[in-house]
Length: 75
Image (cartoon, rainbow, N blue to C red; front, top):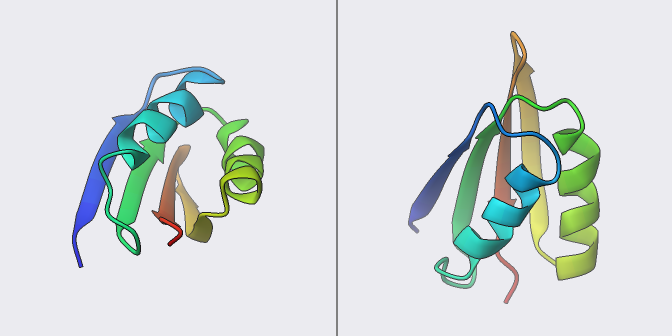
């Protein structure tokens, strides 16, 4: 299983989710997208993103203001 990485640090809402949506197009079904972001609003944004796309927010972590999201592509 491959993991695609996206660095969205320094980007403000809604750019992290918009970039993730674009990156997910290149992720195979069942694959992972790992996103790093620094905007605190990204937590709610990625939860909503996964609810609307059907993708799974496997986990999200926060370490010193940097958020890490792991999203599994549906299908």
